[in-house]
Length: 271
Image (cartoon, rainbow, N blue to C red; front, side, top):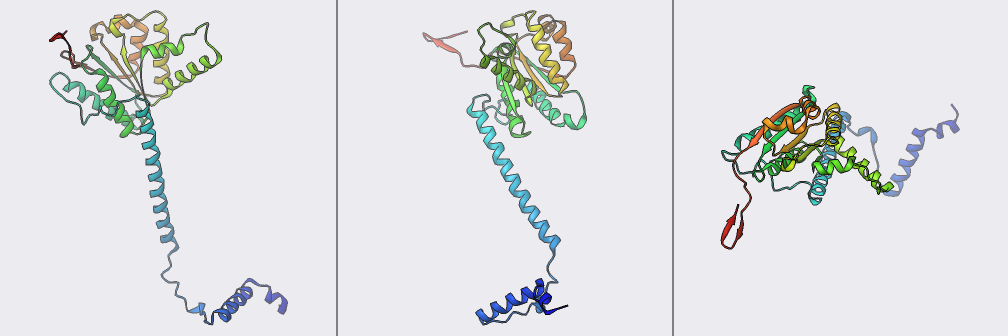
């Protein structure tokens, strides 16, 4: 090999660079004496992977915390109502236990490949249906890292009720809302058949549509109502009632009088 080719090699260029550095620094570098026996590339990569996973987990946790804060700021869920804080007594103890069982079952539903869970909660006005629903919502948000939507049936109905005054924006907003109700991780319908109002023929089309859509996607559901269990079939009708049976239903009831503070008027409490 010619001297020209030798000078053009990488090894020869590196030596030239080292010689130049030695002349400028006044020091000699003996690379042949460097001990590389302790250098473990696999160990270095393992440590780098651990550090990277920690950073990813931290970012994921921060993003989720920001998401939960946005839910609370929208007032969709009350952060004060949790299973740790709820006051249990003889009137709600069994319902709280069943609600916790619903949360645990829902967290395992993907692994068990079973029908989605439906928690059906009955109670008179003021007995704590909304409070217990929020406890479930907070569990899904903070423990299961799932998205939650709490709404009334009237909100659901508005999404599916066309109007002659609807603009293009209105139609799009209704469609977007309906899509969210159909796909959110957990949907809580609060106070179905409020004031014991019967479901209309139109309602009997809307509710089964929502139930079947979520059932097909394996998504859990919570429904609260004031209707007593024995009257539920008659109030909802055959189609809705049969659609409920397609879920793995867990039922519970809240007993007792209203837990809300009474209204005081002229020194007396109004009942």
